[in-house]
Amino acid sequence: MPIVWSQETMSIGLPSIDADHQKLLALINEVEAVALQRLPADVIERVLAQLAQYVSYHFRREEEMMAKAGFPGLTEHEGLHEEFSDRVCQLTAQYFIDANLADAKELLDFLSNWLVVHIQSRDPEFVSWVKGAAVDGAA
Ligand SMILES: [Fe+2]
Image 1 (tube, rainbow, N blue to C red):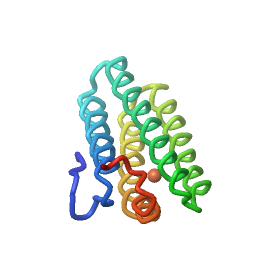
Image 2 (tube, rainbow, N blue to C red):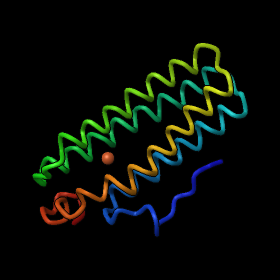
Image 3 (cartoon, rainbow, N blue to C red):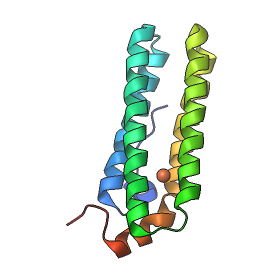
C-alpha cells in the first residue's frame, strides 16, 4: 500500500525537511510500484538507487543542520541513520539474489515503517534546536 503524506501527523514543522520527507515517501511508493508490478530488475535497481541517493543526501542535510544548531543528540541520531542505511543495503542485496516478492515486501515494509516512525518519533527531537539557531534554510 502506498504511504500517503499527512501534514497533520508527519510534518515536523521545518518546511525544507518536510519536503525531503515527502520526496522520500514518494520514492518508496515508486519502489513499491515497480517491485510489485514485477518490472525488470534493472528498472527496480534504478529506482532503488535513486532512493538510496536521496536518503544519503537527506541524512547529510539533517545532520548538517543538527551540527550547526549544536543539537546534543547528533551522534545518536547519526547512528540511527547509519543503521537504516546498512539495513537497506542488506535487504536490497537479499532482494536481488532472486528478486522474489517476499523479499520485496520485507524491504518495503522496513522502508516505510522505519521512515514513518523515525519522522514521527526521532526527527522532532532536533526541531526546536534547529529553529532556535535558525539553521533550517528558511529565510
Ligand atoms: Fe533523521
